[in-house]
Length: 406
Image (cartoon, rainbow, N blue to C red; front, side, top):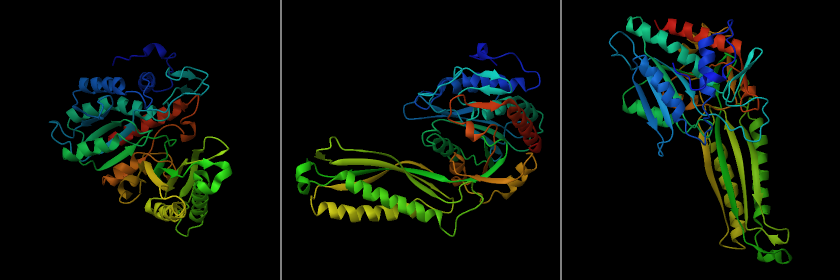
């Protein structure tokens, strides 16, 4: 394996899995912030898989500057059985480092003590590194006829900006007639088992009023004032969500949440503003839908619009969805949970508020759990790191998982 960034590696740490550390060093060296291309990383992994005799499929975005990667280690000796099996899934992109104060170069893996620092160290190139370390063993077992179910590796693009790549990957699998039995998404969970997570939807609301001089307010329609009424209604809905009878205490935040994140409007104090925009974020429990909050917000917006248009017919309120990631349910994955519970040190079932590509896999009918090295508390921060013993635990977990497939 040829590493593009081998000069960034610290001295070998004999007590830790060096190959996974090497791979993680390599992966961190690729600046795959979502606004950039991920093709250099994808091509490095593709070449490595092809050296192992594996067939790689790429699916590209519209601009052809980003790609998902899907590769299968087939069951049996003759590379005939590629349907079914288990997917190890990870995203190749990372969040930006703009404005963050790092004590080391974010795109150079740096080991200090028992931690490896770098953007993506825990979210989630650590898991990908361990999966790549596993592939040669899996490929050899396949050639020996020991692998009784296929093992797949899926790498996606643009997870951090709305899980945009995974739907293309899943559509390609469906077109090729490949339906994996299970999926493990390697987001950072401290190697515990997450069986469900909330969905996320982000909306932008635009209130179009009518300008006037502030001494002639009756001639205008104040967009900020009407937006504030709608913001107040969103806050009221949020309070109602926290008190519902069907909340789930197994989630770290046991109820669906709704919050306003940004707001902007107006040009000067002496001008009645004709535009105000705000965004709000909805994170729903798996049994709830976007319609549960969108319908009442749209009804309130219609009520306010009628009031505005009574004064100026050209005014309006529009609500646009910017991000939509489905929740991951724990329906139909009891068998997968039992398998993972036997392989991890902590077999407790966890449910979390953050979203992943797991919901897209479960929506595609593939039972999924989340389990990977590192802590979500370190993700997206300056000096992001993963504990080296977490990488070691992930390596051991994947080895046991491979054994269960043989």
